[in-house]
Length: 462
Image (cartoon, rainbow, N blue to C red; front, side, top):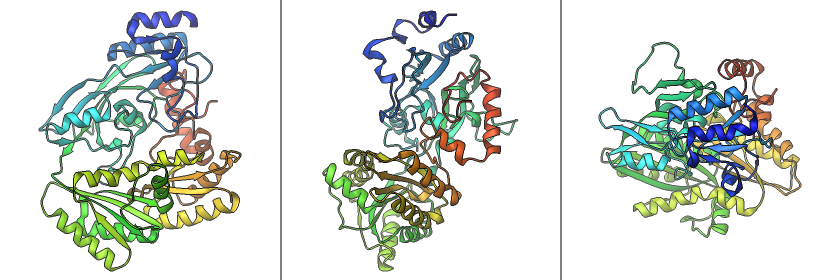
């Protein structure tokens, strides 16, 4: 089929409301959320069900046309943006947004890929359950994108990455076959666990159309506290003390540089309820059993007495809890208002965080003295957003390479939760061992031999 005839054929599958071909209606599919990457899609299609996704893939495969899966467009790596050729089809799952089933006894939810995370959270909350994937973008991020990027967030310390919540998947392959693996089993050792190939693959191996997610009991008690901390090393001592005192109830442990909250104060006009400090920790504990607040306050008293924390405040209401979390969640927007920044979503072994920060800070300031470092992130699981506010003339590629070299020297990863997309694809080629990349290419070649699924993302084009 000729390229110019493909949109009309796709329209026969998805209907007039499911085909976008020109004008301002295509704008949401032309760029990523940060407007770092821009493309020119041939068209966008919005199928209504899995059968239509399969038919779209069959038509595109027969025509040799690449498909770029599109979720809520909240990603930070350009993974859902087409190239500028005008020859790629954007496939949006937005109309496939049904919650198919909630199993209260089995604690699972079966949900289509286009469902917004917050919608799913609210649905299970009404049943007295918890979907413990928590993101700043949960009001627009969609389940398919969360699965395809193996999203993280603030609850990873207790509940794990998205991968750990996924029991089953429904996937459409590059040639339009449907794999129905929507199992609700906690145990299944029957052969290869093929769903793992698609989790975190950013739409390069298949199109996730539905998922079964494992839920958790909804905690009845929650404690949120903000602590002033002298140093990252002290923060890790606080983390160890929290684990010893309140154990598995520790849900979130966020590390924030004082300079990060200064940006929030200045640009977002929010108030930090503690005095100035070099570092802060925001922690949250939750439990279904009583006694959590007393245990947490006793732990806080201990770390203050030992002076590994210099000050602290405990939220006394849900509003105060929300205000504390707003401080953390406003850092990225405040950073954006400050100016241009080069972002690094990295992870290192938790015990290496202080040494990594010291080494990285020294290396960056030695090579780029005109920059400012803005560090925050999920210290409880080793994930740091090591962002650098830079002048407009600075070479971002050189800065990326320097930071990533330090990350690799500590046995870390250049992408902890945001994915590779097209933003980090060349750096992955540079930093990841050749044998690992060779295995990844063999999997890609086996599942997508024509390289029609999100080409140029995760793996560099060859």
